Image 1 (cartoon, rainbow, N blue to C red):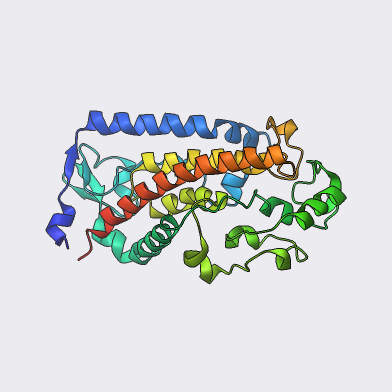
Image 2: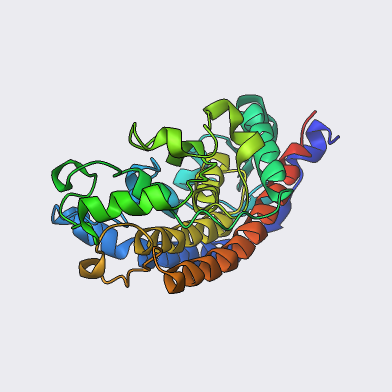
Length: 299
């Protein structure tokens, strides 16, 4: 394991280099969040994209904050606001992550995230869920009782219920399952609990893929912000797929519905799910490397 001295040694990035990286990150995040910020300024809601800022408790400003990760000292940064950010330390004109302090406060979080990601990555992808979690969340509810009331149910309440009753529910993700209606829960093949997450999460799950953004943000500032932005972009794409396969008529959002109740819709969704599972696994591997990089600084 690294010693304190080794933990505080770092590769030095010149100011012009790291400021260019920071500016690139700011531009990227601003582009990704522009529509959300515009809607928020005018009090408008978006049933699809708002999820990324309500279910996940991270603001565009938090996502915009740039960190290089451990082992990098930023030259000419001591007078910047970042020198006062939590888990940062200054040495003359340089600022870098205080890895020992970070691990003292968040080491258990890093260990949990690593164990969850590693367990999830080790499993085969299950591709048969058809995103029915969204259907189970409205099962036996009328239009006025569903979460997104202003979006009509594509098949109506009775047609939606029939789909849930005719297809198997196989959701393994607790944070999706917990929103099932009471009549839908017994229909699910498993009954996930929070304590089961490490044992149940699997790489084909859309929510497990979206959650990579959550874990990336929870690990900040100990991982490069470029990786955090990659995870956010991935979660954004998965949320679109989630809504397209949902029981709602999402055409007014600019999305093309995927009718998972039909053979063609099933095939289309499964192909998308397989493609995104591969992308999720690649991001999961990068997050595991980031966890190992910070845990290497443990005393």
